[in-house]
Length: 451
Image (cartoon, rainbow, N blue to C red; front, top):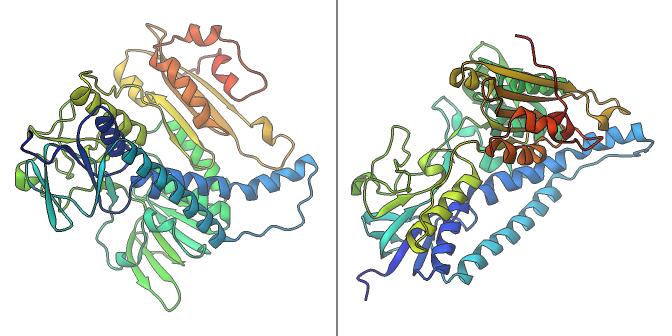
C-alpha cells in the first residue's frame, strides 16, 4: 500500500495539466488535480479561445462592408456588446464542462483552491493537505504590469474579455501578440485604438517583413501606433482616464489595457521553500523530461517559460504521462513549432525568421510574394498579404515559412508539416497548387529576392 494519498497531484487544470492528469488516470494512476479558478486554464477561459471568438465577431463589420462589392445591400449595422459577451461566456461554460468530464472519466479527483507546497510530497489546498509520490506544476502564467503611478486603473487581457461595455477609446500598451490581437479586435468593433510600446516595431522575434506588413495594415485600418513610447502615469478623471506618455503627450481614454507580457504564476506556491530552482523570471527550471531539480516535482507549460503555446503544453503533458505512467518514454520536440497571431490581418509562421536563418546558415535564399487577396479584388478593401520562404542555399531545405493575410494560420499548419519533414524548395516546387487560393503561392514562388 502506498504511503501517499495519490501517485500524482497536478497543480493547475489548464490544457497541459488536464492532459497530463487524465492520461495518467487513464493509465491507472491515482491522480488528484488542484485548480484555483476553474478547469480550463488560460487558453480556454481567458486566452486563445475567447479571444478568437472575439476576433470572429469583430470581423463582421469588415465583412459587411466588403459585401457591397459583391452586390449586397446592408441597410443597418448595430452591435450588442453585452450580448456577445454573454454568448461567449455560455460557450466557455460548455468548454469548462468538457474539461470536467474529461477529468472525471479518467477518475481524477478535483480539488478547488490555490495549491501550495508544504514539502516535496505534500500540497495544502482549502484547509487540508494531500500527498503524492509526484507533484506536477502546471499553473501557467499571469499578466504582468510595470509599476507606474495609476497602473491600478488599467486592465489586463483577463478583464478585457469581460468588459460590460465596449470602450469608445482604448489605449493598449504592448507590442506582442496579445497586444496586436486586442488592438485589431477593439478597432474592428469601432473603438478608437492607440497602441503604445517600448520597441521600434510590433511583434519582436517575428520575421521583419511580417512585422513591417502588419504595422502598415494596422495603420491603414485606423490604429494609431506609437513605437518607442510608453505611459509614465495614468490619471483618473471624472469619467475617463488621461494617459501621460513618455513623449510628453497625453491621450484621453475610457480604458487602458496592459498587454506587456505574462510571468510564470509561481508566486505563493512554496516552490523556493522546498528547494525548487526558479530562474530570474520565476519560471521553474526543468530538464528534458520536465523534471525540476527536486526529484518528485515536475513542471510543464508556461510556468517553465520554454515555448509558451497551448499545443506545446499539451505535448509536454502527454510526454510526462507517457513516460512515467505508460512505460513509453517520449520528449517534446521544440524545433519548428508552428505559431499564429490572430491579428488583423492574421499571421502564420514556422521555422526561422530571415534574421535567425542568417545567423544559422552560411547563405540563404529568400522568396517573397506580396499580393492583394482575391477576396478583396471586387471591394474597396486595400488589405494586402505576404508570403515568404527562407531556404538554406547549400541543402535547399526550407528552414522558414511565414505568411500574413487571409487564413494564414490555417495555411501554415499544413506548411508546418513540410518544414518539419525537412522538405526542400524542390519539394515545394514539385507540389501542384490549388487554384485559385492564397496557399498556392507557397508552391509557385520561383524568383529569389535579390539582396
